[in-house]
Length: 435
Image (tube, rainbow, N blue to C red; front, side, top):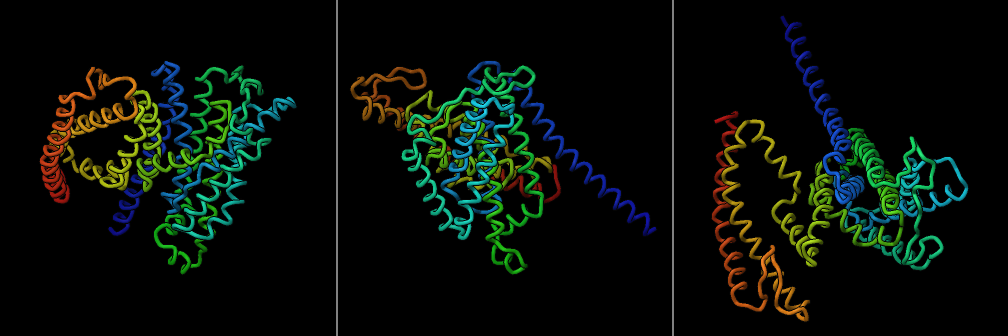
């Protein structure tokens, strides 16, 4: 009797393990299929370019998450390894072209990764001696050092103009010249999938677990016999390796390397993408990378004040969703599994309407202030959401204030309905499932 019970329990555990593995690998297969099919769905050159930028950003954000999300290291200079990987890749391509070496373009990102690893070892040995605020300040200092060197060492960095290269002159594979953007997209997608899988595998290794332990309690890690500083150093090196691959892909995509690759904007962008997506979850930086790239391109076409909106969105995420978009998704997982998620959706829809009204009113006020302050020479006429209006007229200001203020008050009331719906759904889920 006991043997049958044990056998049944082992069989059930084995089935759960197989199901979990099937789901895990199924996600990767689905991701590969989606990447392969995207150019057939979005055929325009702009869409393919955007998808290429997203793929590069995903690798870069995941590499940064090895530091921030996995090991708890806040870096303000992660773009250093991204940029240096890109520069070494460009120089390697020029040497290969000049000497006619039979090295194809798909292997160039590996050169960038090795370059990023080399400089991560060089700089990481110093910076990982400290953690917390000290580590962040050291990373910022290194970023400023490399940034200023770009204008001094013109022979290597090419000054303000940078260094250009022709990617089509390398050895062809299957007659692919990598001149068309779609071919470059598939190269980026392949490396994105490989790097994402390797970084995910890293989180399942003992080193990945120790990185999490160092993030949560470095004193206990030291107590059980591990060196927190060495764990931080290894994580730093691996992060630099993948950042170098991303930088090499960026230079292949643009066929140029310049000082903007390791600028403060680049380091800030990857920080925003990782944090907004959710640094505590592996798929969080993926979401953040997609969101940040899309918003940068979309908002920059709509308004010159896109950086202000971007900053406001980041502040809102920090205040109301500190675990990022991935954290919001994971909050709903229990409700989904217990079948009560549908009970909170009506309250979301109820709160969405006043929220949109409030945001529209606030955007109208911001755009009118910006137009009067920065574009006064163009006159008071302006366009907002396809509507022509006069920025110095009273009507638009009253409309903006009413929409912003009234939408805020209604959203406050609707948020109470959301809280009540969440309370009921949580109680139902804790009781065991569907109401």
